[in-house]
Length: 185
Image 1 (cartoon, rainbow, N blue to C red):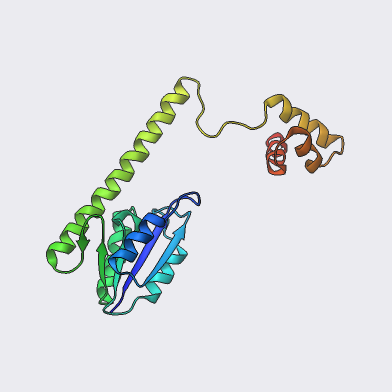
Image 2: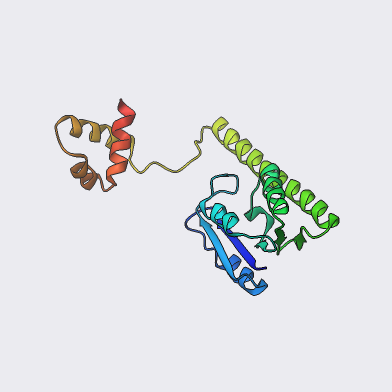
């Protein structure tokens, strides 16, 4: 009869400490944490380890529902698995739990809203990128190498200079050099 926590951050740069502190304060005796994993990803190693660790009578606790997953079906499938194994679920921020029919109904509604929020965000992002492209702007990360330097890198490779040496000359990583060499092929 233990409270087990699960935390997740979407990028390796994010810090899960807020989630970990909240789970500890709530009484989690152990917490599993996925770093740099999207909520829409089904292959989350620490979530799998957490689910494997849970036993009947335990409670899986998350800081916020979207930490468990962003897709409604995915969240509800995990909750159904927990219910079948006699494990309860609790989300701290929303105050949701699977104890009783009202808790289960609210959980289903909140999972749908979490997915709606994600779908709306993706839709806005796509619309913004399309509008930028229409105005001649390209989304994404700025290039580290100007087109003249990319041509120069290809010429240097053709002359037998190694990508390591070219990277030092241009002040970029070897991977950047390889990327520009590949674009030519």
